[in-house]
Image (cartoon, rainbow, N blue to C red; front, side):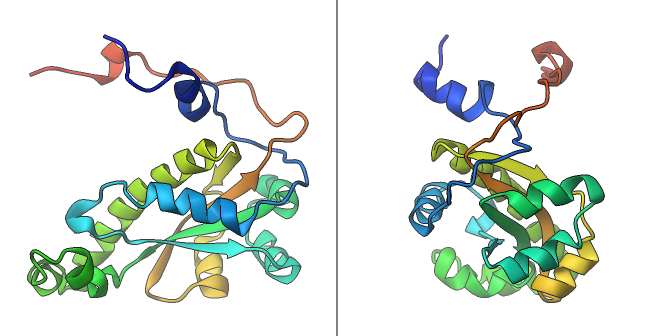
Amino acid sequence: MSLVLDPAAQDLLFREARTANTFTDEPVTEEQVQAIYDLVKYGPTAFNQSPLRVTLVRSPEARERLVQHMAEGNRPKTATAPLVAILSADNEFHEELPALFPHFPQAKDAFFAERPVREQAAGLNAALQAAYFIVGIRAAGLAAGPMTGFDFAGVQKEFLDDDHTPLMVINIGKPGDDAWFPRSPRLEYEDVITTV
């Protein structure tokens, strides 16, 4: 059985897509970011929590502050990418549930009254949304360079607050020269899928 999605789109989103390590200096516009979000906001989350928050780092001053918190190997690409996004989980996402989950607005208090429960749910569902965001970047014809090599506490203190937990930093733009490392192996179907 074949997939319904056009093979060229499959390649764009998955088979040919790679983590970019260099970028051109072509800007990433607000319109492109809006189009990405308008696509990926429809990805499912539990209770339609939608806890992902995205902080776009556009100013040179903010970029310089962020680069200081990146692991040494990630600093050059973060310093030169056209756009950098900090993805975080909003641990107070439940405040939006009456609007986002209107057929059961009581979910806010029935399931998410306690902070540890919210933090676990926000982390899981925002990570799911982060994956959608990466695919959305690819759908816009851009390359993504997601990274978790940074000082999480430092980034939280510098750019977020106690209610937002950083998940990853993503460099975004058109791929530059020598942007790709060789493709790493993937597990085969039989190594991942089991039937019971």
